[in-house]
Length: 186
Length: 104
View (cartoon, each protein chain N blue to C red):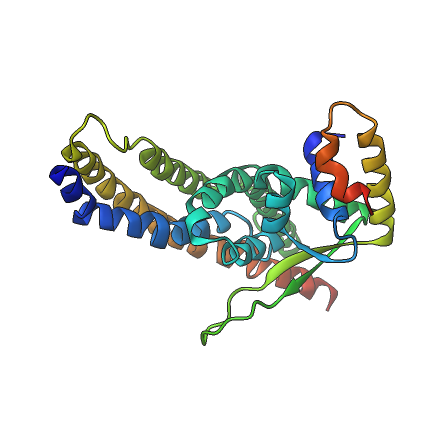
């Protein structure tokens, strides 16, 4: 009994609860929203809906958004990349250069995949924790001590990935893409 | 006509003139997000729904991001009413779940 109380009051559990119900859902959701192309209504909708979800239900809701991001966000991202590439090619042709250059490898496509994999790994890590293996509370603490560093590492990967993704997509694809189209009609 | 589509239609028809939000629709219809949003997107494309953005009231200094709402159009209400009528005659769908929508 005392071991269980000790496990329940350990800092591991505190950090675990703080991450799962406090910080992690927001971070993961923002990373998932970044998979949608900039300006996509679903991106803003996802972030807007997040505030309406009760705190207790947020981890599960965010986990559901992985599916949404995979089956809606990735195709939308690929479509936006294809459009941006077509625009770039058309612009180069108009400028008379790069006519026979092979298309560059779309490196940005890899990043949403990395983000998704990291999100899945985070939730898989959380789901694999056994709440009370055996009868002793030390097992609970042991499992949590494995999970917390995993979650923190995943969080770091997500943040760095989202930052790199934002940095790579903004110059070519979305931020300047629509402006280039607009200038055609000016 | 899938069960998810019928349940979303019933949830929308429970309040045909009101605003519906994704999360609330998901809960009322019992449909997960991955299935709900493609259905809503299709209905938007078909002109059965119209959407808009509503600012969220917050007590803090920073405003929360706006929420997207969906509202049935007249055409959408008619189409979804017909869909629910067809679904009520189909044994694959639970009639009790459709009652709020069919009452409209």
